[in-house]
Every structure is written in C-alpha cells, then in structure tokens.
Amino acid sequence: MTDPIGAPPRQSVGDLLGDVTRDLSTLLHQEVELAKAEIRQSAKAATKGGSMFAGAAVAGHFVLLFLSVALWWALGDAMDSWAWSAVIVAVLWAIVAAVLAARGRAETKRVAGLPQTADTVKKIPNALQGHEEKNA
Image 1 (cartoon, rainbow, N blue to C red):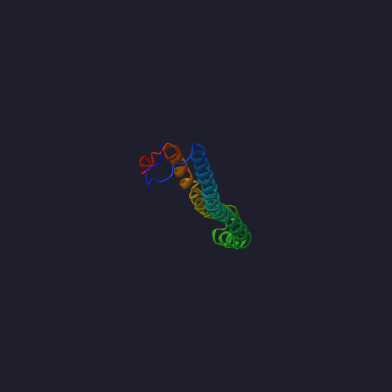
Image 2 (cartoon, rainbow, N blue to C red; image 1 turned 135 degrees about the vertical axis):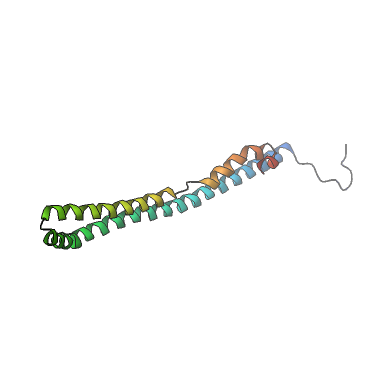
C-alpha cells in the first residue's frame, strides 16, 4: 500500500520511541535545572535569616558590653540599689534580644522550598499520557 501523494511520511515505532525518550530526557533535565535555581533562591533567603540571627548576637553582645554597665551604674546611683538596677538592665536587653530573634525567625520562614519544581513535576504524568489539558 502506498501513501497518498502529499501525506507526511509515517514514522516507525523505533523513531517514535526515540522521540519520546529524547523528550522525556529534556523534560527531566529542565526539572533538574529548575530545582537548582529554586534551591539557590531558597539558600539566599535562609542566609538572610541566618544573618539576622548573627547580627542579633553581635549587637546584643556589644550593647550589653558597653552600654549595660553604664546604664546599670546610672540606675544604681539614682535608685540607691545596684541589684535592682542590674535586673532592670537585664530585662531591657532581654526584650531587645527577643525582638531580633523574632525578626530572624520571620526571615527563615520565608524560605519557600521548591514550589515551581513540585508544581511542574505533578504535571509530568498527564504529559506522558498525552493529557496536557488536565494541567491547566
């Protein structure tokens, strides 16, 4: 049986299987590249949160070291009680540390993981079955 004139040539099963294998390989390669990009983005956000924690520790240390003694001394003179002035200074810096830690925690919660990769990987089974319209 001959093909009608102007009809596209038919591909063999081997050619079709080769096309599917090549397309699947390309799809998987693209998913890996997307995952790498999302990991880099998430790592940057995690680094920012970690930097906030480090900044909180350094700032807390220096503030406690240089200003706490001066404040403790001034309050002790004003109140005639060195012990209560030390407690007041300690409570003030505990509040500062709590605020900085809360900011650092909020930054680390912004780490999104791999949302785009997870979304596109869910679409692979429909694409393999030829039902791309279900992915809309």
